[in-house]
Amino acid sequence: MAREYKISVAMAIYNGEKFIKEQLESIIKQLDKNDEVIISDDGSTDNTISIINSINDKRIKIIEGPHNGVKQNFANAIANCSGKYIFLSDQDDIWEPNKVDNILNMFNNSNATCIIHDCLVFDSESKNTISDSFYILRKSKSGIVKNIIKNSYIGCCMAFNSNIKNQILPIPNNIEMHDQWIGIISEKYGKSVFIKDKLIKYRRHDNNLSSMKHHSIFKMIKNRIVLIFEFVKR
Image (cartoon, rainbow, N blue to C red; front, side):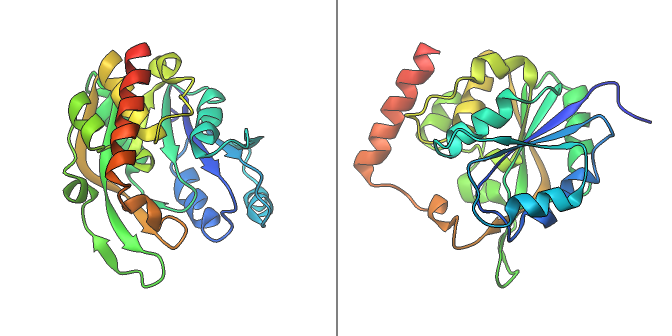
């Protein structure tokens, strides 16, 4: 039985041919016929687009990205979503089969505006588990001040109610991360809920390992000052 409302998956891509098929297949098998996957492509030059087209699913819609970095690529995808709930997705992870149902059950039985779940982190080449809990790695929990100081939010594990889309957008281009922004905006205008379910396999590989590293102290302080300034303005 189909749901009475639509959900959207917002995906930002760039040259994702290696893993995009496995990721999309793990997503679309969980969607109803009226749901959508909005893919903002920032100018892929490999076979990413042809691989997506070969899946031949009308729920998948490719739009041209703004060619202005990952934050604005995600913002573009989000802006074009029309579902009641918006799930964020990277191009290279694997969704667990119960992800959508678990998240929707949580939305339906809570007053959350944003839900973030845990995940297993694995190495793409060896398939070995790096960590069986992202939460433990990041000491994840809610709290605006906590998440400005040390971010717990990771976009591939997040979904939010579209009623806060107007507060989220536009995403400031001078902040460090779109997911941190979405999380603390949700806490300002609603409620973020962290659940312990591990609902994706989070893939680590050469092209994304840098995101696990820390910046210099100066850059970290600067990033937080900019984030606070933009957050207060919003």
